[in-house]
Image 1 (cartoon, rainbow, N blue to C red):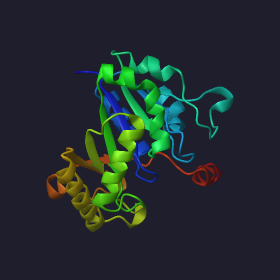
Image 2: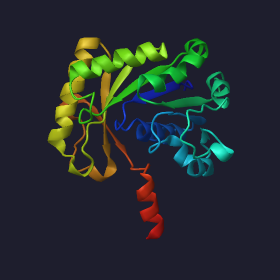
Image 3: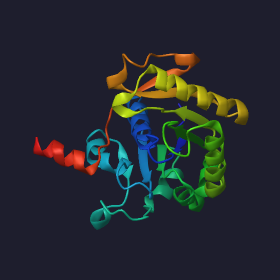
Image 4: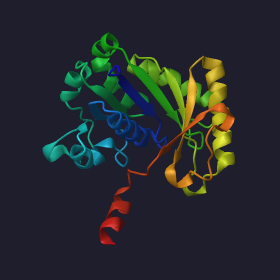
Length: 229
């Protein structure tokens, strides 16, 4: 099995970091040597670096700022990312901030990324601002591609309203993302759902495949509540 370079992007609230973590776990279970690189310099709340200790126990390497900068909300990119991209023995997942400023971080690695080959997945939640319809999503696609100097290769639907999610909400999102797929020619095969909604959101809606994820990343105040219980 080829060790891929997978870039995962998405707007704030899209769930792209959750999907990056899910993908790292899934590929590791398949026997691949996985590296998850936190390149999100935009969102201070939901970042893949928050699973570093847990992943280390399972043999998954997470690249993110270390030491005194471990929890800093600063636009920092680890120099180890370049080495991971250039290492064909590793399956590499890049979790990238979902606005033009975040995607510009990819620019410093464009030569290495293109030389290796990549897939770049745009995770979309149509219940979030700026991705609520096909026109907005296509506009975002174009701005992210311009900023990163790379091309999105696939769409992933993660339409949800957290605890208020139901089948009709997911169907609506799939329909919008399918419209984007028709207009852009980008492949669209998967939609995401939390495991807790497995019985509310069936598989194979509108001919697409459901991917179930666990809820991993929590807001800082949720972590405090958890520690206090």
